Length: 348
Image 1 (cartoon, rainbow, N blue to C red):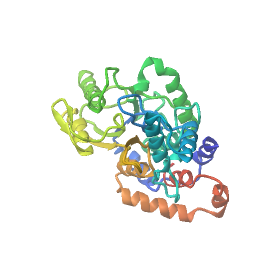
Image 2 (image 1 turned 60 degrees about the vertical axis):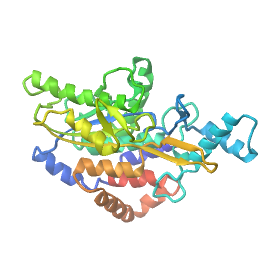
Image 3 (image 1 turned 180 degrees about the horizontal axis):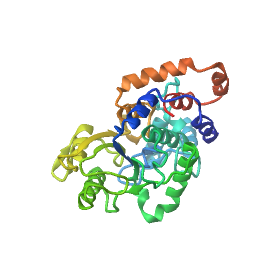
């Protein structure tokens, strides 16, 4: 299974191309504190926007049904036809994988599940890149990395779901993992509400630091250097004319600037938002809006942000290490997803 594949390669001997740089930074005490905000729907699964209702989750049974109905042709239910066409269009959409021909169907959840195994693996890869030698990170300890749940899964009624996600991440990370915190609960109806919640969390962290004399749990001081990585599809919404506290958000850069503005001027803050949103027209012209989940490109961008390298340098090193893999790796990978191997070959 894909989960077994991930377990096999989560302990791979391959190294992140910037691992030695990271160790040197840690030895010099130069590694900044890091916050990673994690959404679930549209990030750790593939979600399809369907009017004003709850997004449609891309899962195996739905894919099989859509493929079957597509072969049969249209039905008498036009609303159902539209949904089938959207799902089928998503299934055919290239997934941006190094493996030619890979489509978003490869990221579908197994029937009855709410998470895509491969997408959870990708989150684990990003957490590992951020954690470095900080073994306490993401385990409720006092490391320099904090992983914050920003999804509506943070509601107490979804505690079982969160526990299941934490167990998966613990398995892939080869160490206990729990979310260090969650954004404050509140009414969230549109993308700007989610962005505001993230900004409030950043603002509250610095406010607490000031009140406690410049330090809070986890060592985050009021004037500390802080990196903020946001993995968020914002309710499957394009960056287009949101009004967030009077700030008009028209791009990822606008959203990043808003989060930066929530920190005090004395703080050195860098923000990177990875927004896994795509939209296109189906064959008949239907607008399809999708939270496509974490792509390989997102992993490269995250590694670049966390290491201080460029995305191009990460991609080049990834390809170099892939070509340098030993023959036993090639034998092991014959029947595996190439992207699973590739990702872990540049980030461990």
